Image (cartoon, rainbow, N blue to C red; front, top):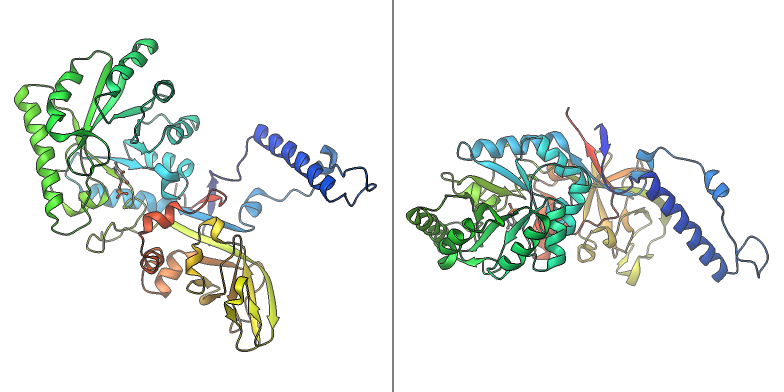
Length: 442
Ligand SMILES: Cc1ncc(COP(=O)(O)O)c(C=O)c1O
């Protein structure tokens, strides 16, 4: 059994938040009661649940509540191990900044960010202002770079107030950044994004060295680093990848020739760092590999393992005769007397509906097949062959037991079936799944 440690995401509420939830529950119950004419009191008096009714409710231990339905577990010890193994693959002295955008690729940024910093990552990358602010509100002191474009006065003001570092993505941002710096009375930390071929954000590579020189002479800007992002690093032998590397190196050489200060440089994401074993510049920005997934089949690192497990609990089991339709559309019809179990997880939690009838789960030491259409909050499983399975049992939907039983990473298998990539599936794990730390290892 894994130890369930710190709980750092959904389900953890401050006292204030708890009271707010209770107040809104109170309001919504009152509303529901008035619509249904109430089952308590007369037909004309809406049913109201008051605070003392709520305090009489039985209090379950929070860990039971968090795992009563469906949840994500994050293996803290394995995250540290992944970071250690990746660091060992990089050129000496290269620092790792952990990419924790999109809720740390669905793993839970509030949980992952402090862990990864404690494990040795030197900084964090987020995509949005709100993501950065959420991490600052946790009290994290580490540098946080917002990778996305911040183009408005309000965004830049907020970012500076939250001590976030900014991607300079186009030269038009500079006057606004200077105004924000003057108002705040301190320089804005900027990381200059150079477009070497991604064609998404950034200063064209042909202008980057000149602009870098200008930025270094603007007192309102603190030039922290120069970076670019690779478009095809996961493709073996990609000419576009070599072109991006060459362009970035040319920008660096031009800066050196101009005699301007040579900034901290970063180019590689997971695939870039793993496909190119020398010269990682000063820093790498790693996402997927830290979470333990290879960014491409040819970029495996021994000992790197997924840190995420997706689990849910069986909430109902029934025996039905042959020819019984199961779930919406009756797309599955039993062909024998069947024991059908209901699992409390559905597409609103991030299990793609298009995987209906194609999932396998692992429970009590064996596999079970999912049957019928996956619904918003629940899905059904055929447990006819498994009389040992009971209501309350936990089914692993992604995790090491399932990967071992099916000889491959299931998140990759899901992605292959859907014509997508594991990134999309992980990011799709919804906010309503609590994120729990297992194996804190310290
Ligand atoms: C700018 C930037 N850097 C780094 C990363 C990390 O990529 P990966 O998860 O492949 O390591 C991303 C992810 O999309 C990114 O957008």
